Length: 293
Image (cartoon, rainbow, N blue to C red):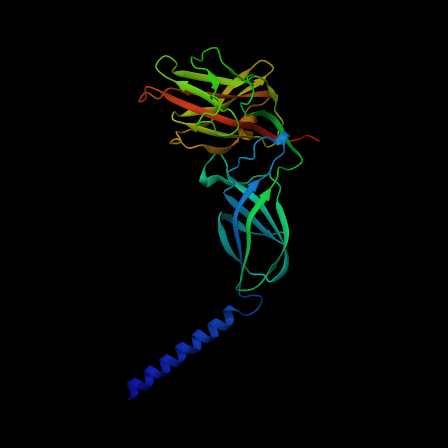
C-alpha cells in the first residue's frame, strides 16, 4: 500500500514538472513559429550582362534586417514572427565550387518583398528571380559565338582552342562553345586572355560553364613594372560528361603581390597519362567586379 502511494506521488510530481516546463517554454516572447518555403532562385540578364546561367544553391534570409540563416535550396524553415514583415533574400553560391565555402554572392541583387506570417502555417515563396546589381562591371566576357576569340594560346601550347561545330550536342548554349582536344601529339594546352586588365583592388570573380574529361588549371598572370607572376588559382576535375557552373574568386591571388597593376586569366592542362584522348569544353566566361563609379 505504501509502495503504491509512493508511486502515485512520483507520478504526480512528474506531471507537475512537465506542465510547468511546458508553460515556461512558451512564456515571454516565445511563439509558435510560422514557416517560410523557398523552392529556387534564378537570374535574369540583359544582353550586356551575358548568359543567365547560374548555380544559386542557397538563400541567405533576413526578416526586418535580422539575419535568420543561410539555407540550402529548396528550403523550409521556421520564423518566430507573425504578421507583416520585410523579407530580404540574398543569393548564395559555392565559392570556387566548394561546399564548405558557401557565400552570399555580392554581385546579385537581394530579393525584397513584404510578407504576412501566420503561426503554424507555411508561406510559400516558390521560385524567385534576381538580377545583377547595377554597379557590377563585366570586365571580360567570352561566349564563343564569334569566330574571333579573346583567348590566345601561349607559345608552348601544343593544343588549340576551337569552336564546337554548329548544332553540336556538346555545345552548352547558343551556337558554339569553346573546345580543347588533348591527345598523344597535342598533350599540353595553355591559353590566356588576349587583353591585360587593370587590377581593381576589390572583389573579382570569374564565372564560367565547363565540361571536361581532363583536369585543368585556372590561374592568373599578374604584371608589375618589371616582374610577372604566374599563379594557379584552382584545378578543376573531370565532370563525368556534365556541364557545371562555377564562381571562382580571383581576389586573393590578384592582391597576393605588391606593385602589380594588371592581369590576364589563363587556362592550362596536361593530358591525363591514363587517357589516349581527352577534352575540355568552356562557355560563358565572365570576369565580374564592381564599377569604380
